[in-house]
Picture 1 (tube, rainbow, N blue to C red):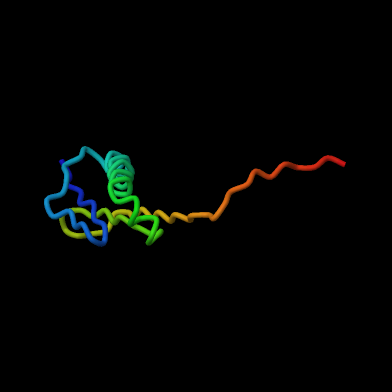
Picture 2 (cartoon, rainbow, N blue to C red):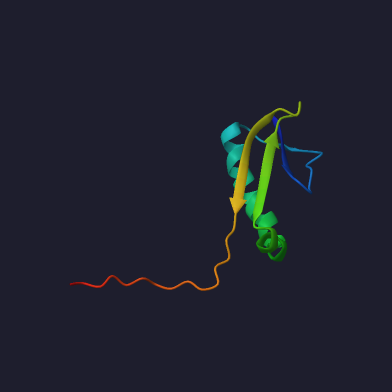
Length: 83
């Protein structure tokens, strides 16, 4: 079974995770990335730009996730006016 490493800039995944396929790794990456952001939400919103690089055992980059958060001062609902 292939081993995938899910690395963020400050959290290298040294041991990796065995998963059955690249599709399974993509799904796992989304879950893991969400958990990392939620665990460190205050820091995420301060920096607002995070990424995760997923590699194989040889260090080859298989794919990346990028998440950008934008904190708005206020969000208003636009109501169209009919003429």
